[in-house]
Length: 262
Image (tube, rainbow, N blue to C red; front, side, top):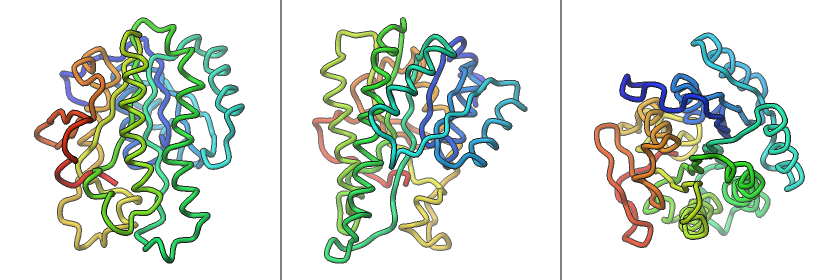
């Protein structure tokens, strides 16, 4: 976390999905260092515990919420929102980092269950979870819903299957929610990180040949920015973030350039 970020999220409660993943874990720790109480959502409890312990060791505050997005129902998300309200009294930010991808496969040979799982975990589940959290977010003075969106130009190519389709759906969801909440105190935005060294990316790229991937921690500050009041300048956009530069790309414009982070 850069010094410039300071306590940008002081007093806020932020929910991070996929909090034990490559991006989710570093984003969670960055949010905690910026002053937020972080609700860590994920399905792998031992990994969630490690993120939680790291946050506490750095002087931050975090709570665990184990939940498998693949099997969770709208009622489960409603219960989650209710528990956050009961235990913390508020929710100021929602950061979607969870992703499901099983590798590059031609549609002809794709297992229908794998295709459906990717659509559900990468698109339907974030929509359901956001829907459940909106009443609580709308009560905040300044709130943000942020989606990590992969490089649409890349994942719209051959073999990306349900994951690629779901990522395009997330960009559409950002646009729709932004239009619906344009006059509300809840900001909606997305961001496309550069290529990251993560387990998900390794499903598509051979590690020793992947010369462009970078540490996910390079994008943690961008997550804090989007969740903080400073993120207002990116409202309604998908922010294409590179380690040394950032460019706003209007959702109605051309496809994103470069290679996003899987």
